[in-house]
Image 1 (spheres, rainbow, N blue to C red):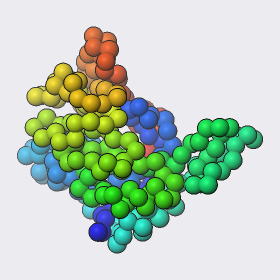
Image 2 (spheres, one colour; image 1 turned 135 degrees about the vertical axis):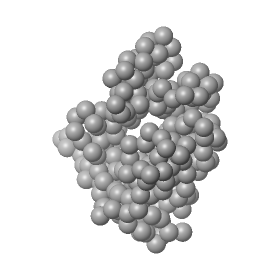
Image 3 (tube, rainbow, N blue to C red; image 1 turned 90 degrees about the horizontal axis):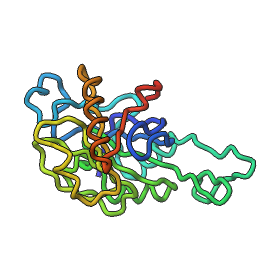
Image 4 (tube, rainbow, N blue to C red; image 1 turned 120 degrees about the horizontal axis):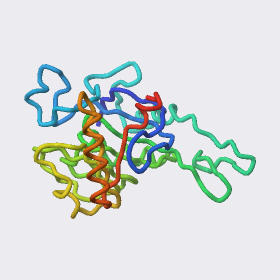
Length: 228
């Protein structure tokens, strides 16, 4: 299988339960809920996407094999141990005392599960990565993934109904939080919808989380601190 990738870059995860963690982001091209072109936004299932996932960029490309793409991801990882009591594990992970800070890759998009498969996950595991996915939940996630974040979209079928975190962009018409809280996830997050109403949406999300403490607030910290 070949893979089409918009960009690969090293940053800090800005959202959800893994917020603040060093990660390589591998952004796959393409989505099944929007073409990514502004002229199609009004007709899309997901109308509020803030991400460019069309085609390939200078930090992406077309990769002929899982091994080739996994190598490109691995080249982006620059994290290392800095403590005197630290070292490097056999998989290249940073070791702090008895704790291991594993290399971490977030497969995102667009919709990454249009392309992410078991061969690529295995190749990333072979290079010492913990593999996460951020998905809209319309396709089943491969079972070998280490972290599954599902972000449901109103009007789209939800196929992946279990995982590590459910992160609901809020508010969405026809996607109230109570519709999802029975699902099999460890963490439930509300993330205020970005755009011209971000201030009022943040207030709404805060108020909902305070009334319903099963839900936690997720904000896009990377935008606040100016990291990618």
